[in-house]
Length: 263
Image (cartoon, rainbow, N blue to C red; front, side, top):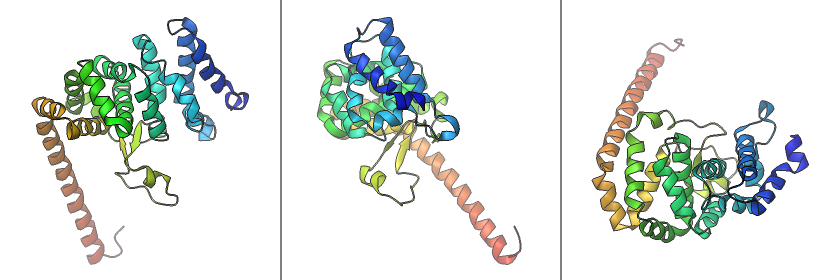
């Protein structure tokens, strides 16, 4: 709360604009922002850094500009901070990434190279936001940097990895997510549906879909990487779980009808 009132977050963002991308001070500033972004404050009453940044869209660009020429460690810190803004400011974030030279390929490289699940999902979320505002730019940059094939393979690998399965349904305040329809997100008083926002490894599915839907090369690479088989299996598993839950619900309804006093 003291940090928010003192304007420390904006001071850190302002510092990023003038600091050397290779300096220890740049790393410390990003580390501070990442640490503050993770924190939800005491009893949830204090705004974490990502909420403050989401309320000030101009603060996003300096963090985005840190990504292209930074070391992998700094890139990961910037991706971690920005990924939490994907739901609150997807359009501003997507435009900032698309406008920053070399940023798309740098994010894709981290999704491919890192073993950290949160960075892989966060990077994929940033690319989804960028594709929503400038799909052509994403495809062109990935093809120009020869990263498209490796990115598709990495995303497909995420779908079948046990490491990512437990992240699929995590929906806390600090979870990485993207709203499927910005208008739905903006509407007040409406009960959120399960599919309104996409979380976790499902963001990788969204990015694969975005790439394959408008680019023939990406479509072929997605199929060759085995995505169709993996998704078919996941759908089959989901239908099986839904059928089991549906049958249980029918059983309990029947029990209630035949024995109304049953709890």
